[in-house]
Structures are given as structure tokens and as C-alpha cells.
Length: 274
Image (cartoon, rainbow, N blue to C red):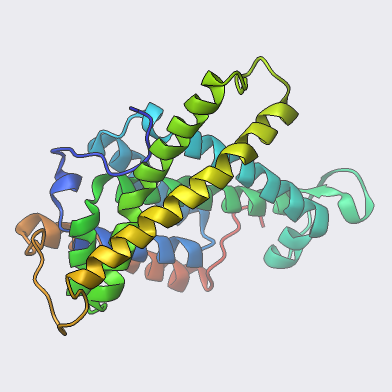
């Protein structure tokens, strides 16, 4: 079960940050990166995100499946962008440098540059999301959400969702092993069609099992009168420490850098080949 995707305990400085700090870091960096179309700023965020993965001690085997899935989705997205808007980069940067071809689907340097920007957004946002999900205890995250003003009922619901991600994965693996023990082969030795069919055969018992667990948890919470009080205390609540303030200061610096780049460039877009 080493490849189960979910919270991974650790002793890195990122693990030691409070849930509220990590939430603010994730939201502010993601929003600033999505708003920017300056490749210099996006490369800076990519470097920070990759360094963060290294510092957090996140191993490839823990994230390989989701990274491959996102990579396939990213490539499909880039192809669809070129298919439906092959000259969007030209309109965006008000320039046209044809590399080869002609007509609507002529490949331009501007289109390639725009699609590289889109790819860069994946390269920085995915590591940030992985860092946040794999280094944040769900209960600590719920306390952080409540601390920044979100209702504790909603905060606890979000925490339960994060907490059950590994449980659902484990249930999926157990059902898959049970199916294989009955002689239904789902390995790479069989055709893709049979593997897809087997996956759908797993989904139905997985859904019913998950619904049963949800019902049990909701009944237990009702019996304990969850939601009766307006406020609640948190076992995992953490106060901001010096390191939290340093990280938040770093985010403020990054946001200021983005604003300065926008001011110098005159817009959110930067094209070095014009």
C-alpha cells in the first residue's frame, strides 16, 4: 500500500507549517500563477514548486499515477487548443511568425509559446497541489479552514473527504484483488478493453461500499450531536509560528514581483520575440 495517494506524515519544514498557512500558500500561489501569462514568473513558480516537492520528501512512487494521469490530460488539452484555436497565440501577442504550413493550421511561434505557457501552469500547479495534499493532515486542514473563517461544519466535511481518499483507494485495491482471485485477469497481459471492463466491474461494489461508510459516519455524527454548537475546539489546531510568518512573507514577495512584472510589461502577457 505504499503507493496509496493521501496524507504522508513527515518531519520536513513544510509538514511543520500550520494548516492555515499551507492553505494560504496553495491558494495565493495558484491564483497568482493562473492570472499570470508571463513565462518568467511561471518558471519561477515551477522552480519553487519542484524545490518544495524535494524539501517535503515526496517520493515518485507516491505520486506517479496521478502525475501520469495529469500529463495525459495536459497533452490532450494542448492538442485540443491547437485543434480549435490554432491562431489564438497570434491574437494574444499581436504577432505572427509562421514556422511551417499555411492557412488556419499554420504552426506559429506565438501559438507554441502560448501552449508552453499553458503547460507551465500545469508544471507549477500540480506540484503545489501534491505538496498541499500529501503534507497536510486532514484534521489540521479542517482546523485551518475554520481559523480563516469557514464554518466548522463545512471544514469538517472537507477533512472527511480528504481522509477517505486513501480509504477508497485501499477499498479499490481489495476489490480488485478479490476479482483477480476469482480468475478475472486485469493485468497488462490482457487487452485494454478487458481491463476497462474489469474496472467498471469494481466501481459498482466500490460505490455501494462507500455509500455504506458514509451512512455509518453520518449516523455516528448525528448520535454525537455534531453541529449543535456554533463553535468547536480542534485537537490539531496550531498557532502561527515564526516559520509560518516567514513563508507568508515569501508569498507576499512573490505577489509583489508579479505586480511589478505587470507594471513593467504593461499587461499580464509577455512575449520576448516581438
